[in-house]
Structures are given as C-alpha cells and as structure tokens.
Length: 233
Image (cartoon, rainbow, N blue to C red; front, side, top):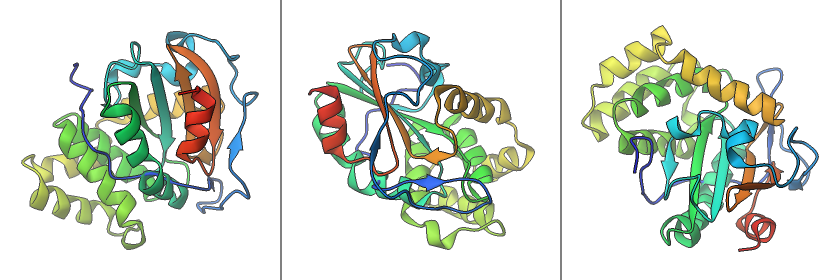
C-alpha cells in the first residue's frame, strides 16, 4: 500500500450534478451515463486514460487502482451539493461492496469548478493529504457534510478549527500552505486530468474501469446501481 492509499470507511456520496460556470451550482435533470464524453474509447487502459494521470499520487481507498477488479475515479468539488449527495448516498456502498471486500479502489480527485470556496478548500485538502491520509478523508467528509456553513470568508478559519480539534496534524501549517497555494501543482494536475478526460464543468464526474480498462463515465446523479451495472460486478 503506497502513501496515497488508505483503506477506510468513506463518509460521502451523491445523486444529481453540479454545473460550474458563474460560481453557482445547478443540478442536472437526470443521472447520466456517457461513453462518448471521454476522449478515450471504452477499453482504453487505465494508465493511458486522462483520468488516470498521476494516479499513484491520489487519495485512494482500497487496493492498488491498477490491480483492482474495479477502479472508480471521482472528480469532486467540496462545494458541490451533488458531490455531497454522491458522498452521502453512493460512496458508502462503494466502500462496503467493493473497497472493504478488496474488489475495488475508490480514487478522489479534487475538481473545484463550482462555488469559489471550493478552491481554497481543495488547496487545504492537498496540504492535509501531504501530511496524513486519514486526516484528508476526515476533512473531505467534513466539507461535504457541512457545506452550508462554508463560504469564501470562513472556509480556511473553519478548516483550521476542524483540523486542530479532530486530527494530530498542524492546523496552522495546513492553512498557511492553502493560503500560499503550496500544493497548487497537485491541484492543477487534477484540474488538467479532469478537463482532458472530458469532465467539463460537471461534478461529480465518475470514471469507471474494470480490470484496468475503461468502461464508461457517469456524471451528475451517480447511484451505486449505475456503477454496479456499468462495471458488471
């Protein structure tokens, strides 16, 4: 298990879809499976797919994504209500059915394209992950579970308080790094990967791989049944 892999019970999942653009989130009308949205065709190997760029450096639950029967790569924005729904309703099933059984890997990629406070939150997530994987998952869950309490004016202050009260890492150092965009290269890698994979301005955008080969993309309201059926598991 590399430093970017941490087996845990996730705390979040969603159901509709946020469209970024003018700093606002708009739910999509329906759940969407779209095999044409990705520049790479079905069957493309994970290591060659844009969503898999720098994959070994991403927060991962479960086995090695390159060796797992199922690999789920989710591009999510901490400020997106549909990502929060995905985390609340779908991710727990991914964890119980795939991650905890060793059949599947769940990979989180920050994709802050919805509300503005998602950008500093994503910077803080990267700064946290660089220090401790478990603290990263706790902070991500905190953002999704308490979205309505965050805004541009308080996101880093509330981040500092949460980290100080709930983890063993240096909260002031995390916030200082987020303010300085110390991990901007990592944030940009995720943004570039999402754009090149065809995520556009929609979150969550979820890329599904079976035995190391691309199957399809699910965007917007992504239920576990859609993932299960698309992967044939």
